[in-house]
Every structure is written in C-alpha cells, then in structure tokens.
Length: 495
Image (cartoon, rainbow, N blue to C red; front, side):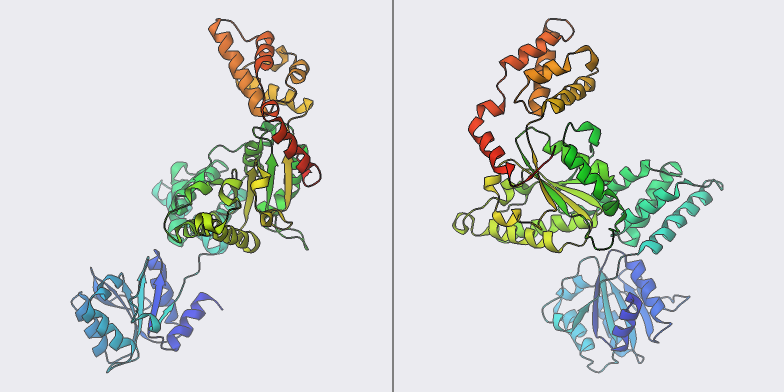
C-alpha cells in the first residue's frame, strides 16, 4: 500500500490519535489534503501563531477560535461534524494536566464526535496516559521520481530568477545527484539541490563532492562520524594489485546498486597487516575508486560511562552512515573498539557493542561498504573473522621490491623531486624490511639533512637515512613475523 492509502485507512478507522514525527510539516499537510479525495472529513490545521484553520483542497479559512490550546480543544469537542485536526507542535501543552485531560476526553469520544487528532512535530514524547491511544505514522521519504522532479523545479526557479538563463546540466550527474539525495526529507533535499544549482548555475561532476559534504553535515547528528575530504586514487597506492583488482570487479555492482542475478551487493573488506604498510591509504582508495563519500568511525568516541549510552552511540553512528549511503565506512584499528574482553572488566559493554555490530553487518540493507583495518589480529573476536562478516580478508604485507620502488617514486614526486634522478632499484634494495610509512619518513629525514646543508637532496643522503633507521620489522621482529605466519594460510595477500 502507498502511504496515502495507509493514511486513508487510519482515518476511515477513526483512529483517535496519530503521531507524526517529521521536520517536513508542509508535506504532511499536503498529504492530508490528498486524503480528502478518498475519504470525506472536515480537515483543520492548528498552530499557536495562526490558531485553528479549516482546510479544503484549494482553500484555507481564517481561524475563528483563540489560538491557545484550551480554547482549541474545547472547539474540537463542541464540533458537530467529525473531523481531522492537525495540531502542529502541540505536545509541549500536554505537560499541563488540564490539557491532557481534555485530549483524553476527545480520544475516548466523551461527549464528542469521533475526531482524529494528529500531532505533528520533529520529536514528540507523549505522556504515558495517552500512549495507549496513539498510532505512530512515519511518512515515507521521497522516491527517485519525486527527487528528480524537485531538482528540475529548482533548475526552473534558477532560470526565472536569472533572466531566463537555463541551468547547464549533465544528465548522468543529475541521476547520481538524485540517487545521493535519497534518504533525505523533501525539505532537506530541496535545500541541498537549490544550493548546488544556485551556486554556479551548473550541474556537473564537481557538485557530487559538495553534495556529499552538505549531506554529511546535515545527517551526522551523532557527531561520531568524520567526513574524510581527501580520498585517494588507486594510483596513489603502491602495490596491493590483487586487492585493487578485487575492488574494481565490484565497483559497478556497488555504485549502480544492481548486482548481477544471483549475487549479493558487496558488503566490505577487512585489511590486516603490518603497521605503516598502506592499509589506511587503501581504505581511502576504495572510496576514491567507487566515487562515493568516505566516512570514518572512531570506536573510541563511542564509549560512554553511562549505562546503555555506548550502544546508543553506535546505533546512531551506523544509522547516520546508512542515511549517507552510498558511501564507504572506514573503521581504523577496529581491534581497539571490538577487542575481546570479559564482562567483569566493563560490565558487558564490549560484548553488547560487538553483538549489535555483528547484527548490523548481517542485516544492513543500505549500500554502505565497510572497510575495517587492524594491526593486532589476535585481539579481534573470532566472531568477527568468520566468513560472511566481510566479503574478504586481505593481508597487507611489507612491500615487495617493486612496490618499494613505486613508493619512492610516489613520495619523491609528491615533493616536486624527479624520481628519474635517483637509482630507484638501488633504494628499493637498501630499504628491505621497510614499510611505506618508514620509507616516507626516510625521505623526509634526508630532505631535512639536505636543507641543513643548504644543498639539494642527494642519493647518498637517502642511503644514509635508510642505513641508520631501524624499521619496525627489526624492532618488533618476533611480533611482525608471527603476524605474517598467521596470515599466510588464513588471508588473501593484497599484492
């Protein structure tokens, strides 16, 4: 059934009290106007500023009742014809015993017609005495057709306000914008579409990043998600050829939202590996490769000392991510938030958080691609590692000689240095056992040495820094080797 049919059914059933939580009250009013073509009732709207007004399909009468709550409820009780009454932001007045009693009399049909009261507001908390009489109705969010019409209306508005100048648009980008606006209320979607169009009168690929930013700022009410403005390209990541190919194979299915018959949409990947070997960069490259926003969730910010608040924070963060879909959700060092722990240590919070997170992994429907990274696999709960939680578990190992050459090339070019002026194979041999982060720091240290000598960077300085540095694979040889041995038969190599 459509939401209009659902609403008509509630009115025909003389539902005494309907509660609608939404910031889009104008859309609710229009929806109730549409019910008049299916079921006849007198329709009224009340607000404290305008009082009680009669609404019909094409007109609106002035109020003849004082706008205060008591007079309004008395007028409803005295009405000789049953009606539907939209009460906007009325719930604060229910704190008063007299007002609450009058509402109970109306919903219990005491000496009055079988009216339908509709409370409309952004957040409505009913008194316990009224809750048994209430039915909560959630307006459905606008579909793709409605959003496309909305975008076109804003383009027409731009033309009217700019002397007939038409908006230049790319239809493929318009389709992407419409898809990314899904999950928003009509009011919010209209505001964002207007912002994008009126900014420069053009709808093109440059608007997609701005749309993602505006949508994030609007929906991240929990504050536990971080919008990563700087995603990466696969070209920015050295090595990881197998992981890149795996991601590219799933790009179309994820971005278009229509996997081939018999296949489920891609869910996500877990990246295990040695610290500093590019897991975070690869996570950013996934978002860049998919062309969708990258959100980062820091589990450390979720934990709260009050009972139940940690789980509530996780639910809010994941709900925000679903509203921002399609997107990539990146959880860095996931073992720090979901590490195994005893109930005695934290009152069972970790187990409850893990339980909810696993349920979300299994049941989520929104196109949220999860990329989790971890350094200490031993700290991860076994439930997280079993097949089905992630589509694949990749191990990001220390870079191969070819990957080390590529890393030198990337970081030298990033600092406006010509990689061709250096013996990259020789530097790759000298950096055996170094991670990508350690190679970058060796380049930085050599640049400081060159700056102190007021001379250009030389290959000798690079070799000197590499020779005196002690990489993690040396400092933590036993732990690194144990991790590599564990991953050898249990994970897929990223490269």
